[in-house]
Image (cartoon, rainbow, N blue to C red; front, side, top):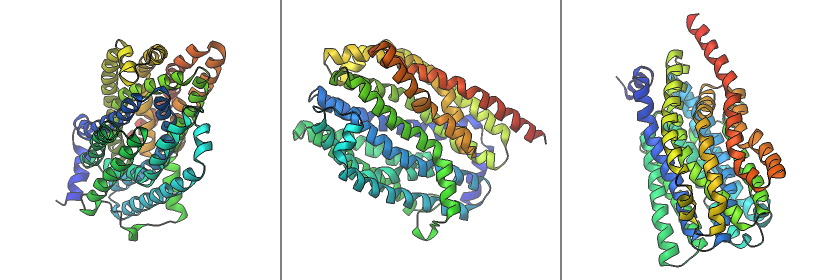
Length: 450
């Protein structure tokens, strides 16, 4: 039996819970480490002053833009690759992997150029104040230098995951993340480089991670390839990648817009409010990464088995991922809820930041109970190629629900309205997913009978 046949048999016959855990745990570790090194930046920068801490919240919007482009090409090509491998069409899978990678790489260089030209207005657009601006510009230019690596790494990471080789993806991402933490400490504490040190640490770690991920393809650890000869920049392949990746573009793009709106709304209450909401979001994201990691372990299972017409395994995977995610997020959310003050203080020991951050983080912990259902719904639809469902549902949490709730609640209730907005958006998003899931499972039950 060839390694390709062995991988196909594994993805379509191995116990679904065991398969999801095998693929999901490495992804969870990758997500945790990625989130931790983002938090490490916030921790070290928070030791400078409150304005510098606010800069990391502002630049988070820029990183969301870059990730939106990367995930669009990564999830767009990866989802198709998993279904093509499920259909045993390896040649076409290689076309999508190479095309997705080079489109992401070229886009990263484009963002570096545009971002550098319009840096100052971009920082103001993302919610910077005059006092935050010098720190935000310094940090942002380092992130832009890393843009080609950051964007194209999203593609390599997702191709590896969708092939069912999450362990290789974990090696690349965690190595870069761990390096980032050590470089933060070295540049900022040993060399006294301030926020420039945090930015350089992130940029260097992104390129190290990029190289390690690329090595997996160079050593032919994958069924697909990144060799340029496999690229096909034709309308069909580009259209399929972009439309399949639209849910990720919508999700991450709206995350950037929501960060901009949030920073501008919080800015009315000073730099402390911007810093507090940014810290609360990062701590919440650390918990959220558990559901995201196990959900990404479910994605290749859903794509492979949907392509192989094994619909019962898709259903089984959905509900296992849902309940496992509930358990993980439930435990973590309760723990953080009762230690919210310490979590905020750890990143910035400013009394104003802590006072604003505690209720914001506690409300987000409550909202996280609604997250596993929306994550499973969104990732399943994207993996099986239901583009409209996936795009619409992915637009809700950070956009179609969150932004109107944030604007309305901030006008009606002021700062408390800002603090409760994400939890309300999570509840509304969860409710919106229910009819889509009921309709889909009814449909595949009928297809299985036919």
